[in-house]
Amino acid sequence: MSLIADWLLRHSVVTCLLLHSLVLMTFCFHNAATSCSNGCYCSENDTGGKTVRCSNMRLIEIPQDIPNDTQRVYLDFNLFTTVPTNAFAGLPNLVELDLSHNELSLLEPGAFRGLGPSLQFLDISSNKLVSFNPEAFDGLRSRANLTNNPWHCDCNLQMALPRVDLEPASLAGIVCKTSDPEETGVQGLAFLLAPAIDLCVVMKRTTDVAMLVVMFGWFSMVISYLVYYVRANQEDARRHLEYLKSLPGIQGKSEESSTISTVV
Image (cartoon, rainbow, N blue to C red; front, side, top):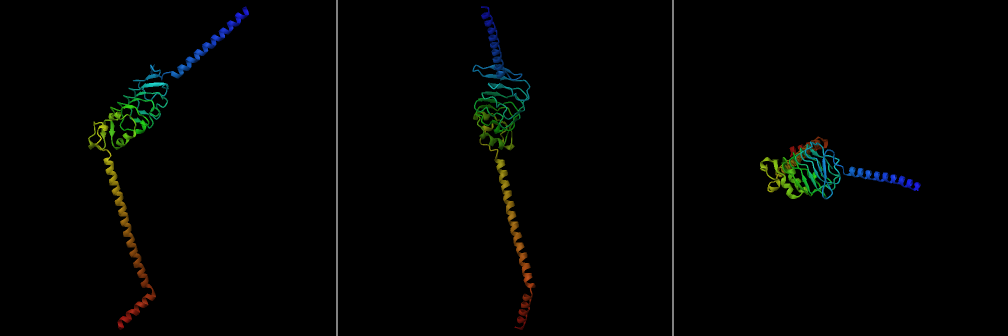
């Protein structure tokens, strides 16, 4: 009886240790998979996704350790100047991204790559964006807040807007602070709401002038070649005539002709 009790006791201890190890390992793996970005505050959504808040932390680079099950990221009121290529490529479930109130002046091509299928709202308002790079928004169909940026409206902007798939109403947030040409009068206006303004007219005029200059140059070259060709032929004809006159037979015939003419 004592042997049975001793056997059961030993196996009970082993079983408890195994269970304890299993629970500890499960906790560690879960914590590693769902840990929050360093220094940020994380919370669980009702749908099971995560919200990561890194607001007002004076960050200068986009965090690269945001959990991949995150649905909402708030990176507002920091010191970012650039959103690099593939900055959020590891967040396939992201539905909202807030980058407002930073120092952003550059969105690299593919900055929001990988967010197209899921992202519903992008906020890049109140930054220092001047030029609009359509390659940064490649694949995005979400709403976007583009307001309160010092946008420069020119032909490049006019040609770039049709290349993006953002919700059309979002583009109304592009309000021109400067423009080229300046006399168009779009400063302070939402560019999308001024469809009659053509910012590419100067480029078209420049292209027309360039074409005229090229055509004039080509025409001048042709005329110069013709003049040279005529003068060269005249010179060759003169030399050929002098050569013929210098031949003895030609000279004899010329003298005989002169004698006959005198006799007559």
